[in-house]
Image (cartoon, rainbow, N blue to C red; front, top):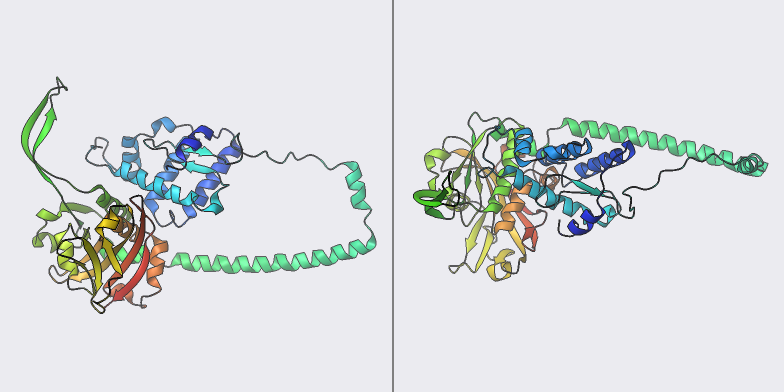
Length: 421
């Protein structure tokens, strides 16, 4: 959180009283109820865990391995170098907290943030150097004020009675409204969530979900250090596949959502994924122009990826309106790190494998990150649902998303087109 780190650390404070801890816990609930967090169980679980541990005086326990074990159900001896789920999740949470406090409506709220490189949350309260405002002193009313209150003219008493009657009417109206709202919330809460409905065919499948992600570079050797003499390095022949860090965002988001429903998964690089792998069960394809399977499977769809031979311009084409290039990415503009990116999110039965497939793929990396966020965000999926028929769960779905990328970081996904068949 670049705009908070130095200032907030200087003004940070550690809640020490019940009043202070209660205020922080209340702010945590506000944060988790926001659209940035309420649709992601894993992000909320992570943030709540570290805040509660800190308020309980157990901040020293907030280490990467502990979080991996407690939150992500990793084995006690898991390798944090090869499994960066804690670091990736924390980075995404920092981004979302940053977005929350960019809203002017939250400028005077308690600020909760994760300093870069740490999993121990810190807090500050803008405008209050001590970290919290003074509570009402609760001083008793003076005798003179009480006497004045008792000497009110009768005309004012009548007016007061009328005001009291009006107030009673308002209170009754509010009570009725609250009952209606509560009933609506109970009804809404009884419906399956959109995210759950979208991923239902995956979570009910007997086979694990396959994630097919792009692989970029294959190394022919690896450098290893001597255990007895770490300064000494030995180069040995080996083969390793590298993946783009931004592709891990949708992988972690979606895999975390599937795990909340008890679903297992496996990950394969695009270069080694075979049709036999895809025919075993449902699959998720991440990335577009660096993932041949994505391009092959989306090519027959209404919305699909197209590019110039030079790869200078890439876009999503609408087969119904091929003359239009509304969803285009110019690579020269992309180099400025301030541009609009576009993505395809689709759920359909792939003819090649005859299995259900989901695509989360942007033209650029920012679009892929936004696609992964959309697929686990209840609020964003609400935008899609407004354009779907009542029986959409039984149909194939394709959505075009737009996101504004600023300084290389993608903003929230916006629905630009929806197609179903």
